[in-house]
Image (tube, rainbow, N blue to C red):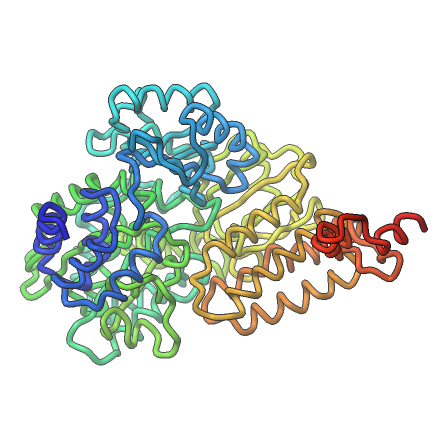
Length: 610
């Protein structure tokens, strides 16, 4: 190990007390200084933290933002989700490749710029987009792509690419981003200003049990998509044995098409942190961690500043609001590009300094979570709702929505509509009304809940409603017009799940690849009627036997469209001729023998001449 490399590794590890549970931050720090985390760096990190070398290597290899290979000073990550693809991703990619003289996965000869692709970066309402190091760039065009490359070659500073700042706190000096909030409809819960300290004051006037009872009375359910009753989760955590308990804010919204948490954190971060503090009081926790997805690293400095101001105001830290013994503080853990870390047990693994692999349940996190301690994991939107409930009362919140789905829901709408963006709507709103709000004039299909959700057909299902008992969603609504090939959409979603699988369990790791391959056969017009049954049966197996939510939901793009859009599949399948399966490529099968024999196969001739 060179002296310079050894010094960097030693300093980064030392700055985090050589703590192996901070492995994510250590690896990130080394990569930022060296441009990679190579074999020598892995050895050094293992030495200073006391971790096994294989454990360090596992972290480096698991997260897409980390690399063993030397990367450029600037890394451009082009977003290639389906909305970006339909918005011009292909042409933008070609422009970057042409101007840089490299292709995806390569670095320019001068070592300045690396070009990569990445799944959804949370900017679907302003696609196509990209991350240039930690700087998001939006509304890309071919001309803008070429201009970005030329500017980077001149100054090498991604922050100088921001010529115009977005609305709201995007213009804050600590954010200084071109990102737009695109809040199209403000509702009565999320976007009302926090009455600073009021919710915590009211919570402290109650016993912890009374706070939990208020949350249960409000009928608040988790806003991440699963819809588990929040009060019940808190009650379990309070009853769990353990001196150390923690509150986690899940800000890893990696579901393609979802960007609501980005806007909440930009404009109403105080509401989220107040919600964490109330949760801590209710369950008896002293520590909180916000797991912020790596794609939102541009918000980190601003959020740290919000936390510091809350400490100065007595809303975090020791003896909060003058209550002796009520101590609670929050730190932010930055992710590094892994969709599966949005699953709560995978998130906890990542915070422990490990690959973000889901844990086997039971035990559940409220019983045995982070480092074996009872842990509450709530979504960004959920925690913002908690603050409103304490401010206005449980009955006020429960007055919105339906009996089983109270309150409002924040929707991230993108795709073929006139007004993509953020909408706060009452639970129970009809999908048809949502489409009217966003200006979706001719929707052929709507994906509710991102790739792991379901695709509904026009117009038959448009009177269905957004709620936990019907169209449940973590917030993503993707609109697709009649000009879109829905099998292109399904293929893109399956590509996403194949790439994002952690690989731990065989049904997810292998099953999704098999489903994707058979789908491609059908897309090419080489499928047979039996392929549809094959996909249904394989999808049911993957769903039933996968270890975590990713695998259990990953067949949905195929299985839900087979139900709602079966004619699209049936139009591309037909029985094979000559006794061959249509998916069987005779030419490919005999090509090697033909090369050896130096002539065309007689079998190929027989089929051709019949």
